[in-house]
Amino acid sequence: TTNMIPVLEHLRTIFDFAISSSFPELENPPTTITQVSPNLVKFGDYQCNSPLALTKILKGNGVKCNPKEIAEKVVSNLPKSDLIASVNVANAGFINIFLSKTYAQTSIKDLLLNGIPNLSLEKHRILVDFSSPNIAKQMHVGHLRSTIIGESICRLLEYLGHDVLRTNHIGDWGTQFGMLIAHIQDEFPNYKSVSPNIGDLQNFYKQSKKRFDEDQEFKVRAYECVVKLQKGEPDYIKAWQLICDESRKEFNKIYDRLGVTIKEVGESFYQSRMEDVVKFLERQQLLELDEGRKIMWTSEEKVGIPLTIVKSDGGFTYDTSDMAAIKYRLHEEKASHIIYITDGGQGGHFQLIFACAERAGILNPKTQHVRHVPFGVVLGEDGKKFKTRSGETVKLLDLLDEGLSRSMLKLIEKGRDKVLTKEELEKAQNAVAYGCIKYADLSHNRINEYMFSFDKMLDDKGNTAVYLLYTYARIKAIARNCNVDVSKPNIGNLLKSEQISLEHEKEFKLAKAILKFPDVIFKVYTDLLLHFLCEYCYELCVTFTEFYDNCYCIEKNSEGKIIKVNNGRILLCESTILILEKCFHILGLNPLEKI
Ligand code: ARG
Image (tube, rainbow, N blue to C red; front, side):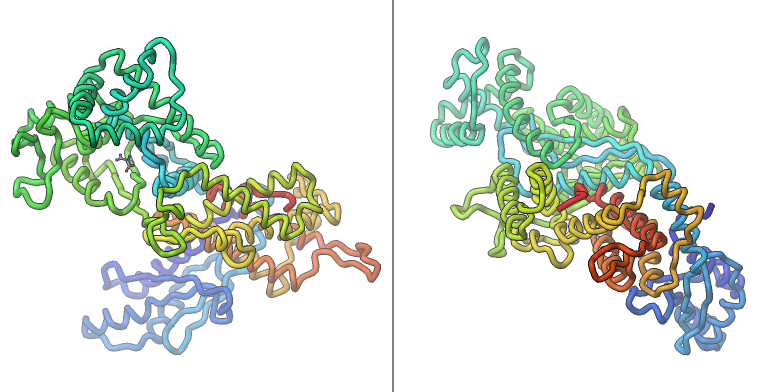
């Protein structure tokens, strides 16, 4: 069988070979292959632009020739390949490449018989640090972005066969616990025997913060509480545990609703390892005293900013916990890759951590790979930082609730409440609400800031979750409506007698869109930019719609009775479904049979 392979990558290899054999005197000649936009395919499905660059290089070597001659030479050296139907040379020196229909047919058939292609790579152990909210403080939209992007990146890496450690680096060990514990002692004196119902932790945090800022005596007590907590005194640990449990309940509600799986390994986990890492750095004489603090520079030259490893009061910092964490992850967890997903503002922090880890011999960049994956801030529709009308930070659970009610309104507006059963409607409500929140985030280049707008994300036209969910359900309905059994065993039967027909231009166009999937996955994997996958999904759905509008899968007579079913086309529909389902899974969308 011809497995579905990354076409672009293979073409690159083929042209690499042709170019090197045409110009053996050149070292590493450039090979660039690009995908041609699906609406310009009369110039080929793919294009090789290397002859232009080669002309310049040869000219530099004193050899005169024009791009067209070079292109012709390259073409004459092309090895035979099942992928290519034909090539031609444009006057400007581009090489236009047309994909083979037979290749398309065999690989679509393979997709139908064997399921989604297995794109497994060499297996790595990859730790993904994402979500990571702070206890007692608000989990805000920034954490929501990290949660959504992180979950999708984990799903992508798992699809590629990696061993993924989903890690929640919760801020559960900061100085905020001093005042929270002191406040618990006053408000719930019996907390040791009767677990108090703290209820609204946000409010509790605000109250204690107010006392902390206004009452000098309370402030002193709060600091003492931090010290006792970090020493591990049981009563203080108990109070700390109560607060963490309360926060955790909230976080888990959000993760459950969004279908996120993550393991908590918070800052507190590193207490003893922070003590150890300080000693470890001290032994190597990498720490320097600076006004009572212990700091570490990234190099002997002491340029830039140092990390603060120990504060003047002896306490540890965010820097300390990240130094302990990177050491633990690389050496105890034995991760070979770590990915940190936070807002771009923390980029500087991670560069310092990576540089210091390398300097201390914790990180060996030849074999261990650490990477900060930043994202931009979330803006409200007014273009300012995302806030409620009264200017407070938006509670995530409220936001998800609003998504639910808005999605129901949308479904009612489209009259779906009259067509769907109660259960189907509720399923649709959830899929649309959470799907659109995730998709709006993922479909924007994560590096940029993005504007949160329910109106835009719930639109059913354009590149939105709603449009994709509708298209998917429409494709699902085709086989259902004409009673074709598309279960796996029966697809095998159908394929014995049926050819995947690619005669019609729109059929072939759809097949070519399907075949782009492996290349898209590898591109998304390299850049960790999920909006390329969203764009691909959208293109696939638009191409499907074009196909469906032009090529009858089912023919009906004037009374609406089915008179003919085109099984070859139904199979093309099913292969679109397979690809869409994989994309939806990575993007966290729940596909619906009916909507
Ligand atoms: N808790 C931090 C915050 O809310 C994010 C932690 C990210 N991970 C890390 N290893 N520093 O900003």
